[in-house]
Image (cartoon, rainbow, N blue to C red):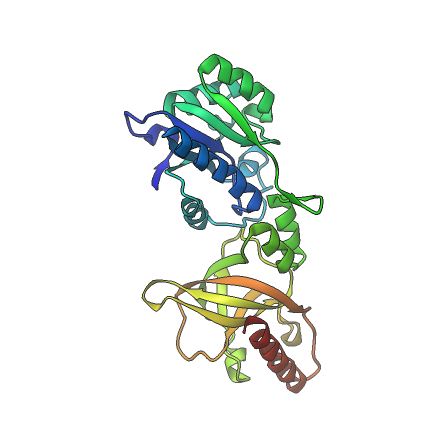
Length: 310
């Protein structure tokens, strides 16, 4: 898959293409359907498929301080899009100037001049241009003028529930990682660098990897979870882990942390970038009056994690 930063980076001589546009945070089942539709149409027509997305999230530019929790970091999003068979990914820097483009200017500059779109595939609820003034109907009319057709892919739903990034964020925020996984089509993933914590886990026989995550990362609600810890590179592995998210109330902690106890693991993860794939919520955070009942509960969490991931 070719990757471009900005539509100005599209190589000269780029031919006609089938284009789909969106933030695609999470690359969930609804996004997969839209992108998959674009890929299929491109192959049927013998053209290249292009996904146009944005960085940073448009909400942060249009309404500073309103940046939503991020389900997929840019690198992970690109990986997921590539797995869908896309030929090229164009990440457009969403600047204040770009946000001022009218729907007509967006269609002309991005879809026609840069990408030579023959077909544009979008979801039913697609909006574009300054103040989101453009909708699918306007895009279709612009297509008549500029020489491209528009195909709107229906939204994906299950039991009357439409899958969306907003819905998945609400699931993660509530700790319902099973529902989030059902909408994503895979477990919700959280990535971070392992840093040194207070070493309390080591002292009680359950050393944990303390993850420093991105400030906008979609972190599940406080609680204990069964998860897979993913190592990359030369040490690539998928390891079962019991994950605690919260402030360590038994120890009067104040800083919210993500700490993973990796089952049956001996080694050092400090400084390593790892990911957590959340499988199930085990319980809420609790405060214990003594260390012994806490250790006993952690032991139960570990065994429950082992059984769930087996």
